[in-house]
Amino acid sequence: MGRFKPQSTAPVPEKVILVGVDLGDSEWSLEDSLGELERLVATDGGEVVMTLTQRLDAPVPRTFIGKGKVEELVASVRSTGADVVVFDDELTPSQQSNLEKALGEPIKVIDRTALILDIFGVHATTHEGRLQVQLAQLQYVLPRLRGMWSHLVGEQTRGGIGGRFGQGESQLEVDRRLVRDRISTLRHELELLERRRNVQSKERWDSGVYRVALVGYTNAGKSTLLNRLTGSDVYVRDELFATLDPTTRALQLEEGRKITITDTVGFIQKLPTTLVEAFKSTLAEVRAADLILLVVDASDHNEGKQISAVEEILKEIGAEQIPRVLVYNKCDAIETETAQALQRSHPDAQLISAREGTGLRGLLHRVAREASNGDVTMTVLIPYEKGLLMRMVHERCQMIRESYVQGGLMATVRASARMHDTLLPYQVEDVPEPGEDGSPFLEGSQEHGDAE
Image 1 (cartoon, rainbow, N blue to C red):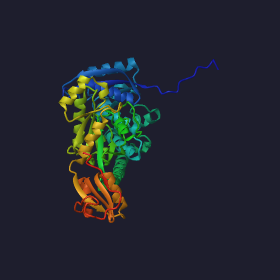
Image 2: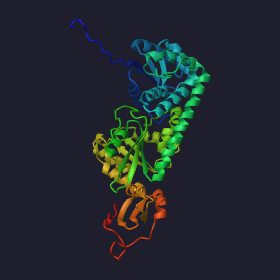
Image 3: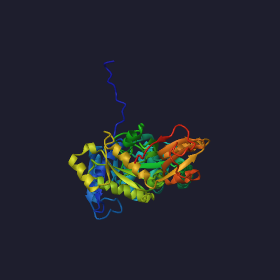
Image 4: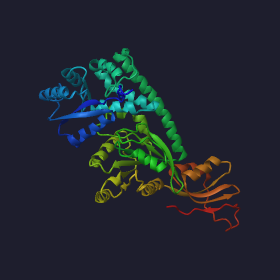
């Protein structure tokens, strides 16, 4: 036994060289953008061994970077033994092809978009998520078929970063027409799923449930916050795009109102347009929300830029008009002076630490206040045979006073606009308390008071 050394079966991370070009047109510094790209590579299982940068007024049409920088890149690949070169900006199909020819087989050249799509391919767990990722991947691959498809088919057995495109597809699908047919099929399937989601969304609307969506930059701590608020066990990990498929959980506020909270996919700067389009059915959860909690990592020095990136995507999906509350998370990781400065600059923001559980009570009070905006006070008489409606009143409304009378449940409540419409047929004039005028109330009268 001692003669044999055990061999590790752990996969060897691919060596990656990052390439960034400063074009002077981004609010993100090149250093910060490449730092984020390195985290994306780590999430996809790679190891960055070198970073090359260049300052240009405009990309070079043939290779994106200058001729001298291409030669430097070739030398760097050989000296480091790199397997993959990742560009921080999107490459055209011809630029990618020319770079691969310059570097030679079997070096892979991919861009930020391909890397993000690859990560999404790993993290998609639901049927809908996999369909959306496959659609985005095929839309990305289609214009690159000639120079890229055979390379990708070859990589299916090798795997690794950028190697999951076309996963499960046969070589016959090299044909553009078949790829377009597949894209059409995927779009049709996603449309059907979106219709089903819209029906479920309408049912939640009709039920009067107040819907809250957690949105924010990737790794801002949305899943941790959802777990803290609802006691659920959504997957949490310190990596980009750990959560891809939306997760909805129910929560009852102190006033008795029941709400739903949905954790959504994290956003990122330079999020591929094809991905935003493919994930529109999932992002519909955000569009259908009554309130958005925009979660930000308070410990990140780019927090302002992250907010801008999220706001831009909310605008893209038509959710910019939905009321939202800015939530600074991870405040346990910043100095007291920094937290005070954030509060001064954003007086309406909520400062919390989902990991430590601090600030959550104030956040829930804020959610309750937002949920009660537009509420109306009304007195209703719900017949005993309307058991489901009685339960809805207790779950969806703020109960002020209730009594059981001969005709059913007599309740004075604060109801949302939706619940007001549902309860309108049962509205009655406000009545005195039991015993004040001999009205036929039964035992069980209860005064709740105003929870405001």
